[in-house]
Image 1 (cartoon, rainbow, N blue to C red):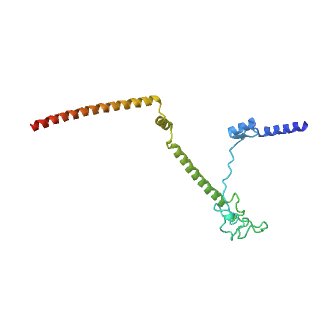
Image 2 (cartoon, rainbow, N blue to C red):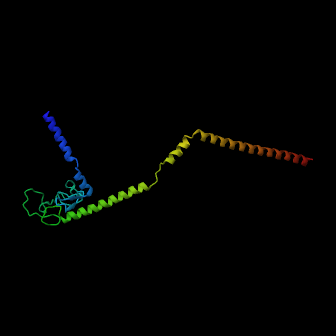
Image 3 (cartoon, rainbow, N blue to C red):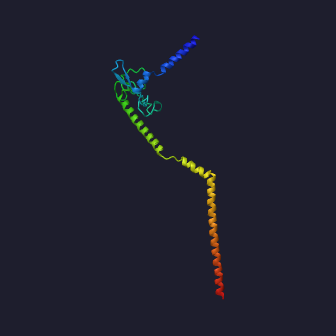
Length: 206
């Protein structure tokens, strides 16, 4: 029983640790933290990790390839001293960057060449994100091919209601009756013309 109570208390304490306090909520909301003297505050900003850039561990080249696919496998460069030899943990040469020739190893965060390469990568990512955003906006602005009106139109064609059927039948019946009447009139006129033609022929024969 004691072990169970101890485990429950430890779990509860862990939950309390991860649960944000009111003070922490206030700090996150105001984006600033006030020190004990109540006169000095520091701005709080979310941590944004630096953009990752590739570096070949064989030839030390940036943003092009990795050591597995290195085209310069026969020309390795030591990332510690910057000289042309494979990496050796026992290298006793003077530390020198293979890129800027300063007194730090290749890949150091303070290396000006690395900072420049990271800035280039950031610009590439900005352009890529801007292009994707532009494409998304264009897709949103395009009219949808399938709309509610399209559905109503199709359903009215393939599944008309009884009222529509009755109206269509009435219209068809009126049209047929009108055509029949016109045909009767036409046939009557044809008969009249035929009779007149016969009379004319008899007069001519006399």
